[in-house]
Amino acid sequence: DPITGDDAKFCQGDLHVLYPNIGDVSCVYAPYCFGYPKSLRKVWGPPWIRYLHAKPEKLYTLIMVDPDAPSRSNPIHRFWRHWLVTNIPGDVLQRGKEVMGTIASPYYPPSPPANTGYHRYQFLLYIQHPGISPSLLHSERPLGPWDVYAFVHRCRMDDPVATTQFMTK
Image 1: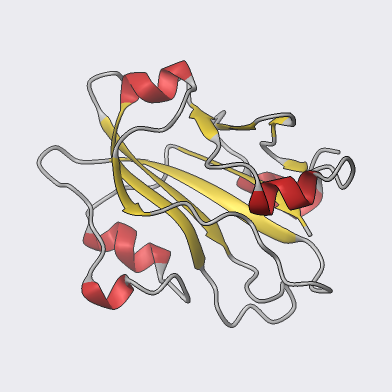
Image 2 (image 1 turned 60 degrees about the horizontal axis):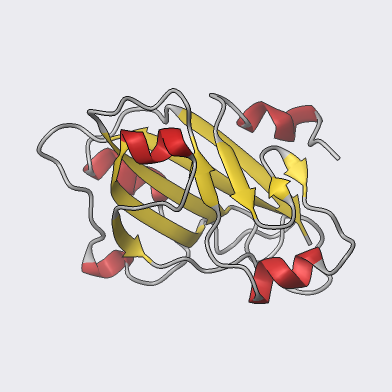
C-alpha cells in the first residue's frame, strides 16, 4: 500500500529503491506477507537505487536512515544510520542497478525492534560539490544516534535532490 498523509510528503524527486522479489518499495508500506520483513532483515543485501534525473558527470551521496529508532513514539536514537555511500557516479544511478561508490558505512538491513510499530526507512540523495569527498568523522562511527544534518552541512551539500522512504515493522 502507498504511504499517505504527512509521511508521503517526504517522497520527493522520483528516487526509486528496488529490492528483489518485492520490486520498488519507494513511498510504500513493505508487504507484511510471504516472509518479506524477514527477507529484508536477513536475506537480501542492499537495494538497487534508481534516479533517472542523475547527471552523469556528477557524483552523489546516498544516505539511508531510520528516524524512528528505537520507536516512532520515542526516537531517542534518531537518526540510526543504515547505509552511507559517497562518490556514486550519476550514470550508475540512472541505470538503477547495484550502487557503486565509496562505502562510508556498510549496509545495515532494516531491523525494527518487535512491538515498536512501523519504522520509516528514509533515503536521501545529495549531489556532491566538486573536490569534496564526504566522509565520516571518528565521532560519527557509531550507527546512531547520528546527526545527519550536521554531516550534510559539514560536507557542504545542499538540500537533497531526491528523497523517499518505505515503512516496515
